[in-house]
Length: 247
Image (cartoon, rainbow, N blue to C red; front, side, top):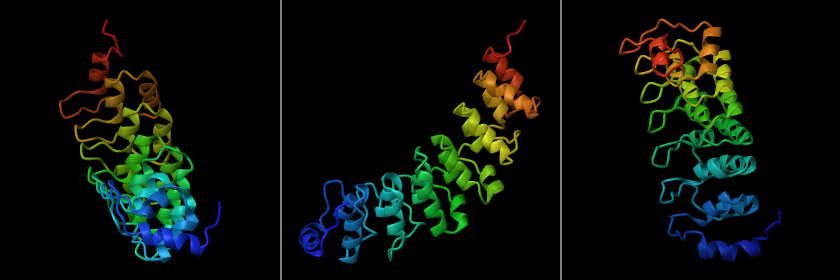
């Protein structure tokens, strides 16, 4: 990366530092999105506002969590006024929520940096749709992210549910992600945990006609006799999905 001299940066900064584009993006936000570490450092030193919001209600830390490299995030975390707990966007998400939605394995290092800067309780902070970061990581299918989040407050995260009552295990089953299911079970989630409809993960697997997951749940002794809020067992739902053809 080419280093920028103070004489090169100052004219640019004074011309554009406080200018908002049509998107509400400040020059600092563009520098963050483009991973311009040297420029970011100088712009902040010259007074660029780390708390400014774009038209989507994101600040620079939120943008870094979505797009940037680990070094950019770590740099921002050293700056005064940067708050890991700050929420933004239409879903009122922290930077931890946003990075948890990234599908790349390299994003786990960014998550780790954010978690180290925050208290461990940020793992349990729900966004505007009632989802904690673990649920977003499961939906993204990011296994390393899930392992990092589950390194502490494990039980509390595994029991946490979305607005409709789905836990991480329910979401993994809906994605038909058997590898993620295995990880969550290995971390101690109950295979018979129920969602808002009273359904266990086995109910969902059976309703989807997912033979592989149904066999897995039988192998880990998931109960086939649990009834949901409509008094249906997994067998009822599986028969409807032609998983268990009637004779």
